[in-house]
Structure formats: structure tokens, C-alpha cells
Image (cartoon, rainbow, N blue to C red):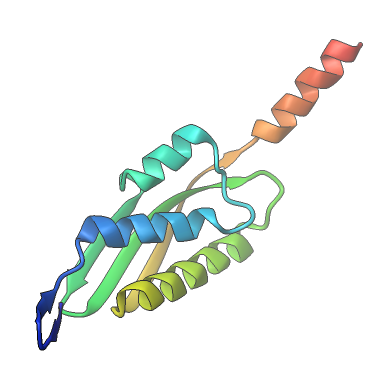
Length: 118
């Protein structure tokens, strides 16, 4: 919570979680299907804990098949930390990434198209 000469500014946990969710979706390699995006942005995929000006986040993600999991997870952590700190002025102490699955959506579509051509 920030104070100034006009009063206090308090940022809702839901707003912080939404910022984190959008930051996660910006990273290449993250599944952006409608159902996963809805889940992430409705904060089911982001858990947040705020102590004074210190934020800790747990983010559930699904990674696209063929992408290096450690690399994508590290990029998600970095993007969430930078975005939340820039937009809110809070300090992000932790961004814990929980990989919930691997998306094979693109491969499945390609296989269906190939079988239809045959």
C-alpha cells in the first residue's frame, strides 16, 4: 500500500494476479488456448500472497510441446517479476512456476490435416 499527500493507494490482489497472468501469456512457449487463458486470467492459475510491499506468486502454466521447459519457465518468472514490479511498484520476492502440462494441440491439428489429405 502506497501513501501520498492525497491518501492511500491499495492494489487489489486480483489486479496483481491478472497482471501476472497476462505477463505469463506473453512468453513464447506458453499455451494460449482459450480455456487455459480463461483459467489463468480468472486467477485460478495464479495464487498470490502479499506481505506489506512484498509479493509472492505461484503460477500454473501449460507449455507447448517441443519447447524447453526450464527455459520457458525462467522466461515466465522474469517477465512476471518485471511486469508486476513495474506496474505496481511492489517488490516481487518469489515467482514459483508450476508446470501443469504439455500442450500437443498444434501436432494434433497437423496430424488431422495430413490424414484428411490422404
